[in-house]
Structure formats: structure tokens, C-alpha cells
Image 1 (cartoon, one colour):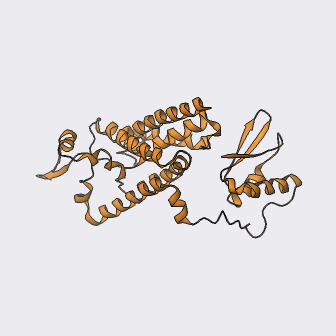
Image 2 (cartoon, rainbow, N blue to C red):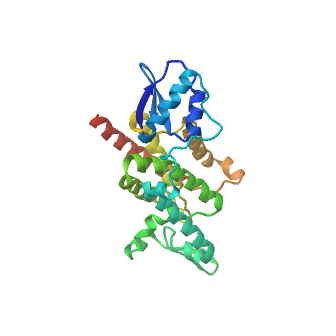
Image 3 (tube, rainbow, N blue to C red):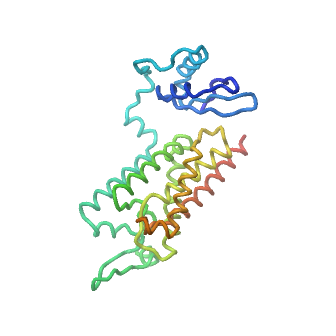
Length: 283
């Protein structure tokens, strides 16, 4: 985020913000001691944003009949994906694995569960994680994060992975994003495994880690560019608590990997505290 201009104290900025989003100008308004400060996400849109502010101050219409065309806002999807390769790759892997499970069924899925699973005399048989690791199956520590058991499960997780992952990768780099996925994925999987569950999967543990990371960065380092709506934090934490209750099972939300959610969230809070503390020391 880059500071652009201070706005009049007490001014109603609703129309201005609507216009900025209409023209796809990423921005944020923060309350400072000497008045609200308007920030822009892409410095190349600095002049376009200032022009809108001038028109807003004059009381002129902000949204014209035809959307304003700006050469830098018409970024192709491919260019966007290239800016966040780790986030895009995690989404692509999840989609490919989901399709392969649809093609090959349980035989493919059990190759990615945290421990080997087989059927003997119509009963499920589970191996141990220690034995799996001892034979070199180290991918099982992470692979359950890429397993999804339905379209809603897949879409919900990947939507939030894209939302939070883009922020982290754009502001802290691909290496940090990769590290977060690895640590959060393994941490969430182990948290679920130690409770005695072996058939679980999903990126939600990583999502909760990214939520915790972004939230702490935005709270402790307000000018870092990180942002998450407070109501979204309340919703996601409330959802996590709800799925831990008996009520969730009675309305059809049973078999939720609650420990993976909690384990991921704890990982994200730790990494968010660590990186925000580093940023504060530098400042």
C-alpha cells in the first residue's frame, strides 16, 4: 500500500470508495491523528486515484456511463497468476488431485491420506505414520491438505486460499507463502492425526493459518498493506467454533477436521506474530 492523499475529517467517503472499486483501484482508508489517509495498492494507479479524489471534492459525478480504461488495470489472468505462483500452484494441485480422485477413485485417494489405508475382510485397515515415514512416504505429512471430498469443500477452501494467499505472496514474497503452506499444512495434518483420525483432508487448516497470519499482520503493522474485514474474521472463527459443537453434527456438518482448523490457526498466529515483530523492529 502507498499513501496518496489526506481526506477531510468526518467526510462521507462512501461514494468515493464505490467509484474506486468501480474502476478497480485497490485502496484502503486509515484513520490517522491528523485525518483519514487514502492509500493505493498499485502505485501505477496513483494519478487516476488522485483525479477521482479531485472530482469527488468538487461534487462531480464519479462513475461515468463507460468504465474508465486504464492501460495498467487491464491485466490478463495469466499475468496475475504469474505474480502469485505459489498460491496458483497450490490451487492447481488441489484441482488436479480432485479430478484424479474422480477418475481413479479410492485407490488414488488412499495414496495421499496421512497413513496407508486398505480394506481387508470388508474392514478398513490403517498403517502407522512412523512406518510410512520409515519407508520414505514423507509426502503423506502434507498431501491430505490437497484432498477434498466434494465441490463445495473444494470451492470454499480454494476461494479463501486465493483471497489470503495473494496478499501474503504479493506483500511478503513467494518463499514466505511456500513456507506457510508447508508448515501450516503439516502442522494442521499432525494436529488432526494425533486425535486418532486418519481419513481427513482439505486445505482448511492452511486457510485458517493464512487467516491468522494476515489478521495479525494487519493489526500489529497497520501500514503493511495487509487487510481482512473484521466481520470475516468473526465469521470464520465463529464457524470454527460452531463445527466443534454437537449442533453442527445434527444439521449435517459432521466429520469436520476441527483439530486441523485449530492447529492451522495456531500456526498462522505464530507466524503472524513473528513476521510482524520483525517488521516492527525494523521500523
